[in-house]
Image (cartoon, rainbow, N blue to C red; front, side, top):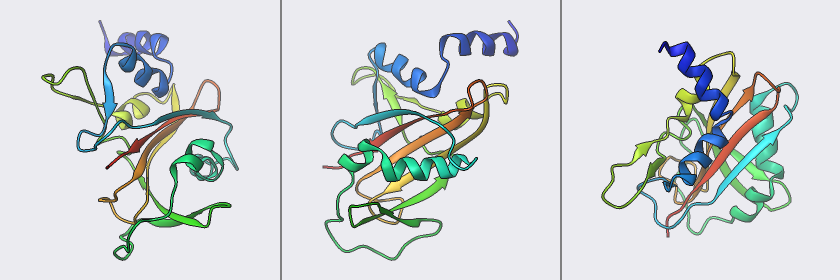
Amino acid sequence: MGAQEVLKLFHQEVPSFAAYVRALQGHGFTIRNPSDEGDPDLDFFELPVVDGSLHATLLDYLGRAPFIRKFVHAQHFPFDPCQDPFTPFEVPETGVTWYYCWAHDGWGRVGAQRGDGDYPLEIKADQLMRVDALFWTESAGMYFYEYPHRDSVDGLFIHAGVDARTGLVHGAAISRVWT
């Protein structure tokens, strides 16, 4: 079967990245960053595009989503200077500043594993989002972290794309948890 035929069948069964992750969970896979401790929180979202921009939509999501509000807290200890390309983001009405960074591999460190002896599958969200312009007109990955560097203690991996069929932003966020 040709790749284009497989792609059509795949998207009939898995219409969004959220559906892909939910399908893995439904088949007994645990979704997490393998280096993290504890169970992550997941948030799937579908949003209208803000100001004609996927990036503006995701920043709006960071500022307004109840998921972000329950997750964000003040840093517990002093931190090193901000690494490039992290940008400070003050979460509205909290007085807390976290840091975000655009990345093509926002979920690159997230895996799905079923059983302790199984090898984890990597969730290649960037590949899924870019697989065909027919389905996704634009996609982005993002790190949203407590501290302004990639070794932050707590944070989120976010991946979203503009669905070519609906014009809505479909995305998912998974917490990074170190206890």
